[in-house]
Image 1 (cartoon, helix red, strand yellow):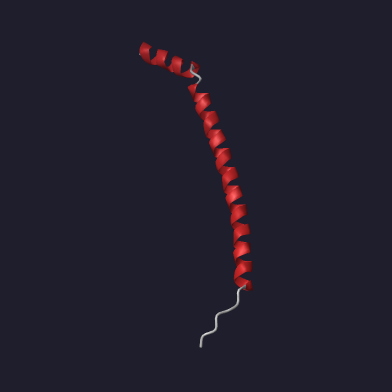
Image 2 (tube, helix red, strand yellow):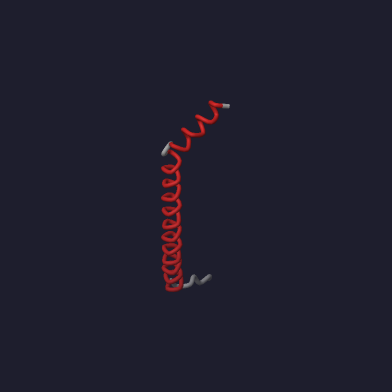
Length: 62
């Protein structure tokens, strides 16, 4: 039982937990920014393709 208490104290004093939490928060922020950029870029690219498609002549079948 004493070994368990010592391990628990060691774990609580360790700085690995807060470091892992900081990395998780940074990763979440990076993912949010990336999704926002991809969404905005996707909308812009869709508009460009729509404009190109509407400006092309329609094919005529003979």
